[in-house]
Amino acid sequence: MTRQSLIIDCDPGVDDAVALMLAFGSDRLETLAISTVAGNAPLDKTTRNARMLRQIAGRDDVPIHAGADRPLRRKRAGAGEFHGEEGLGFLTPFPPSKPIADGHGVDALIRHVLERPEKTVALAVLGPMTNLALALRKESSLAARLGPVAVMGGARSEGGNITPSAEFNVWADPEAADEVLRSGCDIVMFGLDVTHQVRADDARIALIAGKHTPAGDTAAAMMRFSQKVEREIVGWDSPPVHDLCPVAWLARPELFELKPCRIQIEIQSELTRGHTAVEFRVEASTAPHRWATKADADGVFALLAEAVS
Ligand code: RIB
Ligand code: CA
Image (cartoon, rainbow, N blue to C red):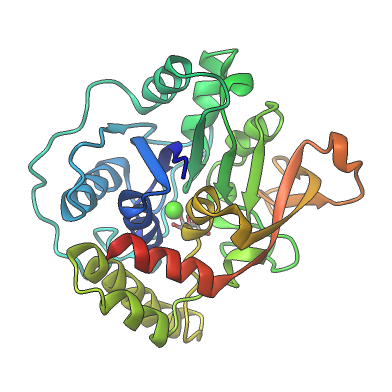
């Protein structure tokens, strides 16, 4: 089995944490580096959290680079109520033993992609797209050299989760999302339409906890925190584990159905800021983007269970 090399750009964040446990443990993926971004929590916390999760998973071999501490233009806005004060739910912060790697996350992304044959390094973006937008501005060849860019963001038929019109990651930095979607990168977008199909119910959480490993215990704890919060705030019993989707697709693409499309981002209106206008009436052969419409949720959780075993 050939392993997909990837870089993960994230803002841990409880669902980012579950996605990282998948990436760290899957033998279908080779995680070259992690970059962090401000989003669910400020950059210092998302970066500390990524280092904590790396240590829990026993993957201190993966370098972590801190990235952008704010959006391209907007003020930083968090989603603390869904991730807890420290960004990892109930998990008490501890000082991770390994420091961050030298170099900004944007430069690390560029370096890793340019060091390898073109289209061989994929990117999973699990937070606001600020770092990728900055990297595309800095390196003109990046869009052509990057492999698939699997992004968690946007909403079409599901409606928004931070406003009626928009999903948090795109809403948090709509200008970055707009620049990324205009860049020519091979974008596959996993919006709420598909992430709302991948929910952590009691049985799936028990499957992961049942592996009795530090990675499995941590992933289960993150999902249990989400269960509590989503019950209180949204009234859902089983929270969607949004950020699992892009990483699971890079590991096993057959678990998802995608549709060719053209995606445009609202950056003018305050009312609909960050709305993803997804147009399916395109020629498949020349469509600039792909939008995930279906997920095999049991397959995704089986993949996670394999990875945390
Ligand atoms: O809207 C869901 C997204 O926003 C996820 O990436 C979650 O971690 C938050 O960042
Ligand atoms: Ca995230």
